[in-house]
Image (tube, rainbow, N blue to C red; front, top):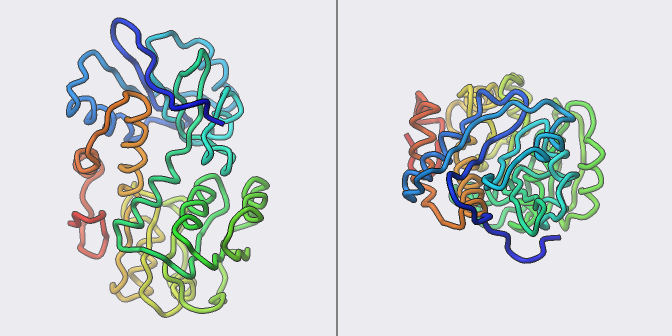
Length: 301
């Protein structure tokens, strides 16, 4: 648990932060955090992408000096980030993974800002109190989505996995308020009616059949979000367009990414940055979607 609200470690000279993972060269986190530093006029702050292979995160963190303000953590290091932390927030503990490490109290505190990012993005899309939800994928990101949906008050969730839900995901299901069932993807059953929201956490390169996605949509026009943001449109987004004849837009993962990064900036710097600043920088870097049926968030394209 978090022993109070951590803040940036005060130290003279330049401050450093980075995103770590493997692979990490594709990450747009540097774009987001550098845009925040410019808006906040934080001179002397640096943010980079650093390749850290699986199993090496603890050693990397042990070698960091007092100038470090925090780390953004991407796959496959989210479980390692939680394991090495001295403290963790409730979302990191509940999901069993962390995407943020911040120095505090002589050690490191782990956070999961993905839960906040998912919930804020869906709320922006007009999802207020969904009854039924479908989540595709059973990994760490799916766990964050499940927690975010639970807090939005969802009553029933179908979790569709390609093989089986990972152990941490199976454990989480028993702690949620919503009635949850697990099925293998692709599947054709509708699971009790058309969902109000569908969230895809499968890799952008997964290319499901339109018939399969049509069954997932259940004949309705739910809020649909894909956590992927590049390449875009993802295979899932193309399948939704085909299955719905272009009637159901897909919220791109840039919305979630901007909101979770804004929370990270607050944790690492102690300052709030407008989400629109990050969203604009992100869309400039990732490229706006080529058609109006791909939704970028409330600003659209």
